[in-house]
Picture (cartoon, one colour):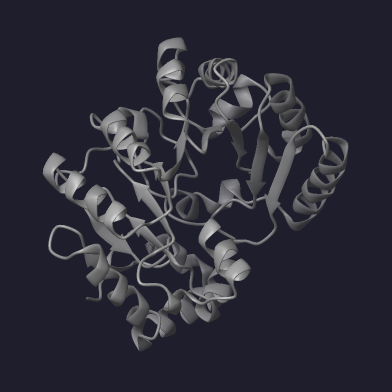
Length: 323
């Protein structure tokens, strides 16, 4: 469950009650130095129509004007975006809570100090193994040692550092060691859950998806580690897969917006539907489209098909415009 859903529940409200999203998940680029087998966005290339500087800052101003409290930046690899720090500085100067999701490989001592000065809500580093060979088997062209070093640099600068672990058939057995490693690095917490069957992960599902028995052991280890580190480090896991999440969202859509690098706004990750374009519409207009889209027969029927035929998740990045 995302932060917007948690805020909804605490307030006893529905996404329909808001005039703007509570949470922006913004994929600021598609460029990436890795070729991860499980990448939901199928990153690793440049998108020719990515928003330019004027379009980016027009969007940023709308976030501030609509008083959206929380933004998460991801990619691709967000630190490869030429405007990364300008975007962060603008949002933080407006007192917006900001999280960054990165592979960590571009964070050295100087970058960590610069990040520390911005006082992010958190920086999430992906570590998908307790050793280099396992991590780099999932994150092709990845460098485990650089990711680990990034955690050390950030922790040294008192940055709230979180480690994200994606379980697959060939690394799921290392989750206990990974959590121990995270604690030794001084991480604030470890976040994990079932591998998301979206994008490249859907295409590689046969080699990635753990068995039910492996997941059973995985969650048992997580529960033990939660107890072990209860007073020292947060261990959080989301127990549901993409299909279970989609079933829930059909009943309770989230008060959030998923922004693509070119300004298109997706309804939700597992579905291909785009409900707006920031190059042509305001975020306020797109939010109205978002609300209406969850009542759209085409969306509902396709979502039900995906639930019945999960292989259709491989089409999640074949965008269908419905505005």
